[in-house]
Length: 122
View 1 (spheres, rainbow, N blue to C red):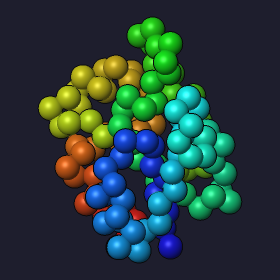
View 2: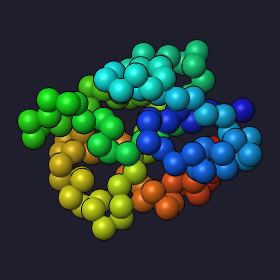
View 3: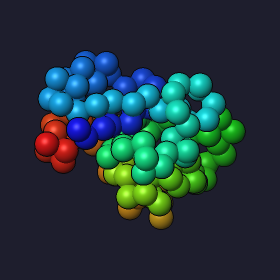
View 4: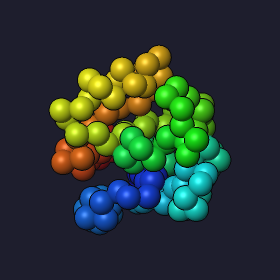
């Protein structure tokens, strides 16, 4: 069974639909919201195939305008795809904001995330 790790705030309807498609879910935390396993502690033993969450969930509380995606290091190291939900009309702005780290994530409109994950994992 494929498994999707999700950051707090992910629409529970999406998670339920994934489960009913045969895709497991695992709550993940960003290190300061105490929501599930810390995303940077993921290992291959966790069996997570993809991580989803809203863009703001990877932004540290003391953010000063230079985003560093070290919070997603474990995903990069273990080949886990990351899908950050950003409204389609804001993708270009988000890509500029992510700068050199933009290639480490996939931006997806929240309304399309279920279809994107099913296509990738089923």
